[in-house]
Amino acid sequence: MNETANQAKLCFYGAGSMAEALLRGMTAANLTAPSNITVMNRQNADRLHELQRTYGVVPAPTEAAKQDALRTADIILLSMKPKDSAEAIRALKPLLRPDQLLVSVIAGLSIDTIHQLLGNAQPVARTMPNTSSTIGLGATGISFSDAANESQRAFAIAMFEAVGLASVVEEPQIEAVNGVSGSGPAYVYYVMEAMIQAGVELGLTEEAAKLLTAQTVKGAAEMVMSTGENPGELRRKVTSPNGTTQAAIETLDRYAFQEAMNKAIHRCAERAREMGDAIRSEAVGSPSA
Ligand SMILES: NC(=O)C1=CN([C@@H]2O[C@H](COP(=O)(O)OP(=O)(O)OC[C@H]3O[C@@H](n4cnc5c(N)ncnc54)[C@H](OP(=O)(O)O)[C@@H]3O)[C@@H](O)[C@H]2O)C=CC1
Ligand SMILES: O=C(O)[C@@H]1CCC=N1
Image 1 (tube, rainbow, N blue to C red):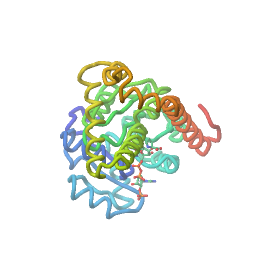
Image 2: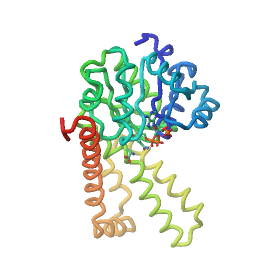
Image 3: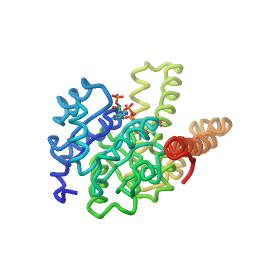
């Protein structure tokens, strides 16, 4: 890999919403020059040109351009849907050099399945980011294959730190990251939808309910981050004995809110494992490593 970080050549293999979230943050943070970043997809050349206009990155709309970009990249970001990943990785096999780093954001896809598909132990960073990377507030878990060297590890971490917080975990914990923070924004939005709806039922305008809800979620998250106090302690400070919050929390408990959240996160992690098994079955005919 090119040792000078801002000279590193990146190739986004898949140019959808997660790729754009990362692109936006990385170009804003000057992680590498936009002219060193190539974007490609299966067929949507308009999308590639839109990314070129917005971020100054280089589109690879033809088969020859794709192959050239994949061959010459220091880092290839695998950012297609899980169902498309086995075929896409197989197509990479004849193009790769052993020193290229693959960075995967694909839910469920294990490092071992990538190695099986390629037939070698290519350096891999398996990650689980989230869509808040778009505004530099992402939360990403990263795990590495043994072959990833120090400079590759450092660059992968820098890529995700450019779009928020990055935490290195062992690969078996990546499904837990998926359950907590990869899919996490959706749970928070779901809670916000309920808060807004209730606010409107109680007489607020939609706009006021939305603003009050969003500021409340932002403020609560910031309180946890900036005070270092646990959410439980902070909750107790809001909850006056026999007051309004206690009445609300007791109602949430009657509907088993915490149990529902717990089960949802476990199910999310389980679903990631199921999806990984499905890719593996398609790739090598057996569901687990
Ligand atoms: N959305 C999220 O919150 C998160 C998503 N992820 C992971 O990110 C990945 C991408 O998700 P998302 O961005 O939402 O998906 P999108 O559908 O928005 O984008 C997928 C992209 O992959 C391209 N693609 C598919 N097959 C190939 C191929 N063979 N060669 C080149 N490009 C290909 C598509 O091209 P075309 O349009 O031409 O078909 C498209 O550009 C998923 O694996 C998901 O698990 C991870 C964390 C969070
Ligand atoms: O729903 C999904 O499968 C992807 C992975 C994490 C967030 N979105």
